[in-house]
Length: 524
Ligand SMILES: Nc1ncnc2c1ncn2[C@@H]1O[C@H](COP(=O)(O)OP(=O)(O)O)[C@@H](O)[C@H]1O
Ligand SMILES: O=P(O)(O)OC[C@H](O)CO
Image 1 (cartoon, rainbow, N blue to C red):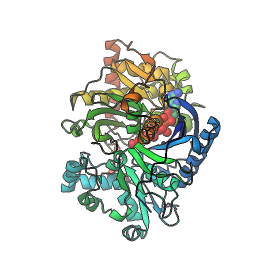
Image 2 (cartoon, helix red, strand yellow):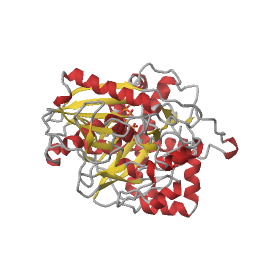
Image 3 (cartoon, rainbow, N blue to C red):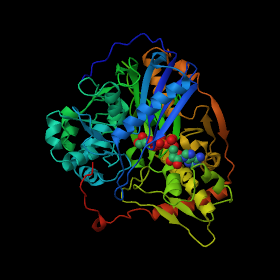
Image 4 (cartoon, rainbow, N blue to C red):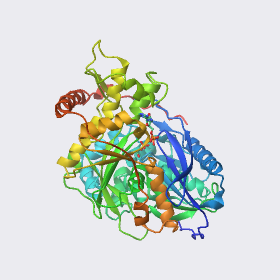
């Protein structure tokens, strides 16, 4: 294993490649100097839900998909590795994998950010003095959403893992760490690195110094020997070997911070919301973390980005666990759609939700209520309600969840939005975009490249190797493609908000302790 930065090769390449390793799929996009997408490839991977509240993925399958999409994107662009100036990575955050550094095999399925099995670990920490310590150092409230409780769970449940971790035989990472290690050759040659945005969200890193904190490692029982080196988002960390040989691996980001960067929200006061599996609204707060009014309003203080050799920039984040995933459930588990875009066609068959509300608390509720014991409800059913009304309620769930977090941003840290920049897979849905503008009562803007996550990873890699000279040039590449302005009457907004709020109340505290499931053996 090596963590030394590689020598930057002269960037002859005319393109930058970015990998977006998301919750449901992995994509590779190739960008030119104008920030335009030259080619793209995408591959879905299996998600397993072996028990209620559990969510796992196979990290090896994700590594294979990554190789496939990178090779396919290059083939579609008609270019080779020699044409690529740099590679950037973005990833679903908090998803936790541990692997054997000699064989490269994961010791267990990767536990994704949607998995609730570590809720108790987090609750125990939160209830005692360690909870205060964690919050003071990280700015984050202990929750099963973050990586450290999951890592603790693995260390406890995989036989012999803690001993092997202390001996340095196994490595921990989130998905960008896993991919970087594999792309740079794996084994002793693979770089074992993470970036500041992903590292902070483990709950093991000091929000201000952005270094692993020994007191936090102690709280979660994590051996330092298994941790990657923490690096800025923009900067060369190694040279690709197994994929894009010779190309500098030059940028990495948690996907939501990548989207903030890709939307050119480099400055304090700028914000975006990304609508994918979940929805994540980040507002840039500049060079120091904002704490006042953040945790108590159900928001998170988070790292926005760090350029090599510069001070980190911070953001306030609102995390919504289920957005597009509710549409996927409506399609896959209920079988009411063939494709996700069909939800719009179905919802447009009716004028309103017919009195019906769907609250997707499948993995508890994240911002602003943070109730791990909440579970989903469909409320207001009558014989009048059809699947078209349900489709409308499914879309409205994303809009009202956005309303709730925008309200929390205003009443907590006092951040008000006068427009909202959006991106992500769900933004292809025009009815949803109109509904979001309607309930927020502010205009919504979608950029020309709605793949902001990939764009952010590409920007980071391109900046690191001088493909783009500075942030100003990147600001100039942002283009608005579509806008939606509010059309809903204040009266209707008030009425439907009241219905939504009543439905949310019914989800809270649903899980009762004597129904808690036992722990089955780990299946590899
Ligand atoms: N037209 C659409 N309307 C509503 N939801 C959609 C539409 N297209 C995709 N989705 C949802 O968006 C999600 C995929 O978005 P994406 O940004 O690729 O997510 P991720 O990066 O989390 O994997 C899926 O949950 C899918 O159901
Ligand atoms: O895969 P996404 O786009 O829903 O993003 C997942 C988040 O990073 C989880 O924190």
